[in-house]
Amino acid sequence: MTTQSANSDLYFSTARELRAKFDAREISSVEATRAMLDRISNLEPSLNSFITVTPERAIADAEMADQRLRGAGQEPTALTGIPIMVKDNFSTKDVETTAASKILKGYIPPYDGTAVSNLKEAGAVILGKGNLDEFAMGSSNETSAFGPVHNPWDTDRVPGGSSGGAGAAVAAGECFIAFGSDTGGSIRQPAALCGVVGMKPTYGLVSRFGLLAFGSSLDQIGPLTRSVADTADALNIVSSHDHRDSTSVAAPFTDFAQDIDGGVAGMNIGVPKEYLVDGIEPGVRAAFEKSLETLEGLGANISETSLPLTDHALAVYYIIAPSEASANLSRYDGVKYGLGSLDAKTSAQATEAARGEGFGDEVKRRIFLGTYALSAGYYDAYYKKAQQVRTLIRREFTDAFLKFDALVTPTTPGVAFNIGDKTEDPFQMYLNDICTIPVNIAGLPSISIPGGMSDGLPVGLQFIGPQFGDTTVIRAAAAYERATNWHQNHPLI
Image (tube, rainbow, N blue to C red):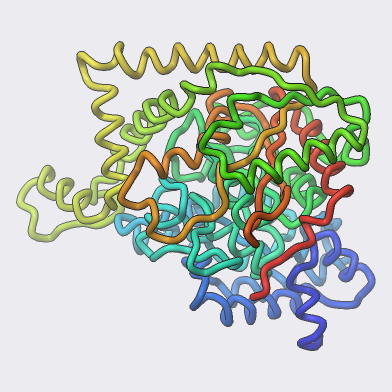
């Protein structure tokens, strides 16, 4: 068995480092899993990263993984035996799936989503389900019906959202990899604020089947990890074509790590000036400028560019995303699943009671916004116009990638803020996504990696690539990671 001292080192190992320890027989998956479960038990009272922990299932899966690692059964994969978390908007067979909402409390899915199935087939050990903003609608993980997640760097601060549980768990050493969903920055923002790596792949590369939908044309599943290499390995597992998802791309298998050692020498990297707005905190701006110097030192050609339609991306998003949410969440009526009312005399009363009691304020706000934008008399003025501008934003990115291999920006305009600071001002909360939303609108790949510190808190650096340029952003991010030590920082928790 591992000692407590060895466990301290284990908590902040990368998945690749843990896999090397498996191969060297220094530790077993069962031992690593027990260490993670102990860590979760100790830290959860202060972090609240998990909604559900499944220790018995995890140990059973780890035992099977150990057999596989010793040559019994299927060939091991990069994630065989690795303890992970999945966000609680992923459908998991026989394990409660709530999307952090009262309306789904007690819902037990009869099936696994495709991403979860792929992870199980790969031999990953799922420790439990991660906390999130309700139905993934939020930027701080404060809208969860199960309480806010606390940032392990400072537990008075937010971890980012909506995959805040995932970001906090990876940063705190509660798991080695976590999987989240990203609709407008919900993987990359927690990665930035918690000091880990988070990637939103090209839209359609990872099946959304089994993901509780928020914005169907925007949602994408991706990993949060402690290294770029782990990110590539994780994407190799969950990326697959799926006929059950009509937006799934039938692309040939791509090894996301194939160019990871390529470096950035000779790469043309653009810096969109619109992302360095007045609202960027001085510490974030300073860290970003230092990152540009690092990239230039590695041989990248850095030059400023302009994406003027970025200024309209936030407005476009907050018409399209709530409109899609309004349609997607109409299925939660308290009849088929979710809260019901025994006192209701009509189905309309039952639905009103279920939705009134089951949905939180932010979810209701977005449903109202979306319903208004889709209503007769306003559809052309809002939703149709937003979709037209979305097309123009996509074209603008396409034109930019005729000149550049990748773009680089801050991930967020600021570091983690105090819990409660922005809950009374939705617009200020929405501005946290200003650097990440355009990527979702265009369906592009993007990765956030640790890019510095400001006032003792992590700063994220974001690389954006062209459609299906996922290996390019991984290559650029890996080069920066090798040249810096920011990814080796971890909270003293």
